[in-house]
Image (cartoon, rainbow, N blue to C red; front, side, top):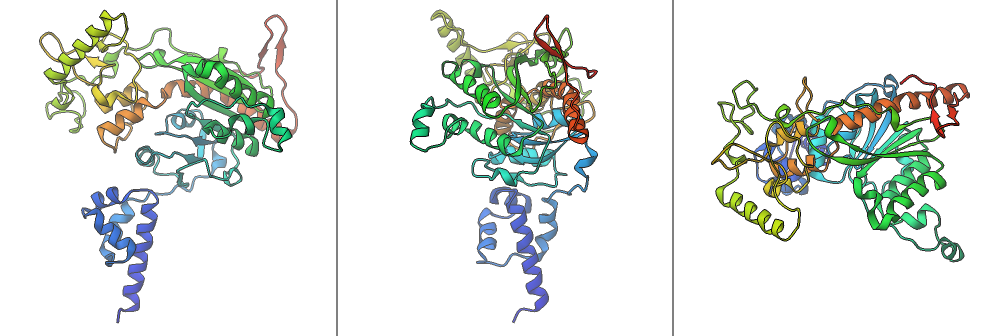
Length: 437
């Protein structure tokens, strides 16, 4: 008969395993414990006993929770469709603290957890079925939601049938609907939504029209939108639309957005390959050279050249993007893992070019800082997808910087009941904030 101590140990181990399984797949746990995936499955189903000696290894997979009080931050925010945390990093740099995260992709979750392991909150996998009332109150909502076409069904017909109307009618079934319902329920002071540049023309302009009408007319926010290019902060052309909304008219303007007059070139993010860089064996050889696996094979290089020549002859612009350290690259895309064709690094005459390493992609997107490298726990394929889908962190940081005084204005309004109304410029028809930027 098993002892009481033995039963307690087994129960504690299974409880730890259950906690870890909320964050990691069976495969990921099995790799960490160096056992087969089937073994994890047998432990969970209790077909075999989960040994107590794995407790220490399981605890290593759980984050060290922070006890920091959100009140210590300048403002709080939630991170929806979070990806790997690019928007979060930008808003943390402006004094914000993340108190809720949602991201459905398990590989992105792994990267996010690895880099923000101190979080006191779990990642919500799918925001669609999540009750908005359960989301904590927050000052700012961040969302890089996917772009989807909207319904243009008539509201009057919906009313006659007793069905949902307003944004519930036009946006139901899209992921923007979930952003809208959370804004409607929680009424944050502000939000920042990010999307591809083509959102404006998507579905013949209907998508952006519905989004803007929903935010302004249905939800009552003061909205500004602008397409910004990341090239002034990182060496790639990357245009994205940023949509900012405030619950009150604070005078926010994208005119306050500042950037360097001249952006960096690729040489600033490439591995120097002169043995002066700290060696990450995954990306570099012991001598500091880029690992051979990132160099294109002769066969692939010939294929890409022939493919480009064929499309050029047909009058199309498709082809590879061969770049040197003194240039600015094309946009890094989520398909970069396939052949790297949009950004190929020229290695000189009679040498095939190479792809960027995931570390270089982290730098290209502004995730790495001089004091801290962004952790890349996933495969190269997943890393390329994640960076290709992400935001340019310094762009978001600058938007957060110019939003922060207006967030503070609304906080003072909540505290005092007095809103520092912005001055209205009659000559330009634009709001001018009294707050120093």
